[in-house]
Length: 578
Image 1 (cartoon, rainbow, N blue to C red):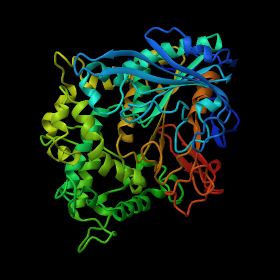
Image 2 (cartoon, one colour; image 1 turned 120 degrees about the horizontal axis):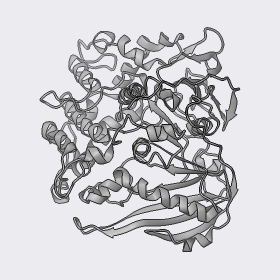
Image 3 (spheres, rainbow, N blue to C red; image 1 turned 180 degrees about the horizontal axis):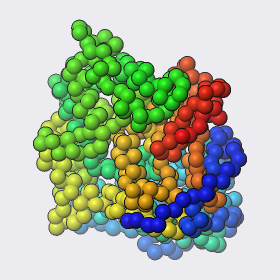
Image 4 (cartoon, rainbow, N blue to C red; image 1 turned 90 degrees about the vertical axis):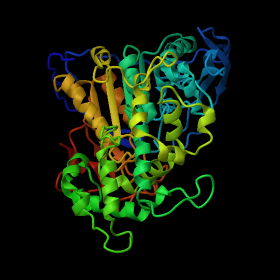
């Protein structure tokens, strides 16, 4: 949809420290968009009494007090005193598979409340209620939403192990896709009212990977419920990305130099031999050599990832092996396979399946190889068979094979079409229940003054940053080139899936989002830190040549961090977004 162009007046504001990192922002939103008031603090009025709270479709199993520091979150600051509530919603027995389902959840309600609610959207295929702490984004954040004073909810999205067999049940599919968020959100706000005497002033939803998908789907489906949306590495087109993983397996199998030695897959291609860790590292170095200086300084980081795609050519910029593979070259066959994978998965008939991927130094990250070799044969086959297939496979048929054999034998032509299929039992297709219904229409969030902040690692090996850039470009076009009034995308150079890789991957996007929503301070940059020696959780993939406390600005797309020409290259202050 289109609207009258809106231009934000740019008002400078001072740099301020935030949770050990520097978050800087400037500007205000267009005065034609509503400005939401800041949340007001409150104090917990009830805890154990919440065990008897009566909420529609909800059973509270426990409500207990947790002392300050009674919960330990790895790498994060001390968690304050809070109330822990556990329960479930919508318990039922499936008419399709006969199993019992419910939406399990836990809520943590701080004694000293900041007046805000945070829906923690979890990753993977859900299936368990993880600790409701509310990560703020990036690698090993030094704080979390709970520590900041948010009331936080976490859920299993409506199913329990063994996963992914819940995909046989039509309602469990919908809960996983979007309906669990729709059920839990009003319940959580009512529980907050029972605990504090009032509903939250401001509500946020955030997560990474599938959690980022949950967040963007919520922005499209439940835009009236959330003031701020934080979407990291959003798997917005997850069914396509999962099928693309099987495409990668088939491609790597064609150049595997070894076979699996033992077990159920004995004799099958060992796809991890297609490109070795040494070869990935060599490729990373060649990309860096070609693209490092595009940001104005040679510092071992490629901060202009989009521009790098035109600058780097694997055919000419990587030596071709003339003899044995020695880690300092790639064979012609390897180059051909990598070119096809990075260009984006296609069916044998040439139909595009999923987006292209960026050439980025982060290809050397262990996270990268894990998604290409391990997750593609362990997680994705089951997800495709049961969740992203209509109708789903039967469990009996699936368990007689292995993930590797499933991927190798997968019919990309026929299988891809089943993402969009329906029948009398599965009346909503996987594509429909997993994706935002109108992904470039976020007008409900926009027009009520809400904001959307998206971040994505340029070297994400499973959900393509290029796919997210394409979405943001279409969102911009749908909003007369002014999507940045309410939605901004930050690429994280070198970062793999949600964290890791040779990158500055530690940052606090939640504080930036709150400042934007409640103070009108649009984020012009977010300062990220490389987790070198001395970090709360060290990233061992940070090159030793980098300063141990290197910082860099993350810039709103399409801007990139450019060196100012003088000053310490380890300090983000010496880089500008342009």
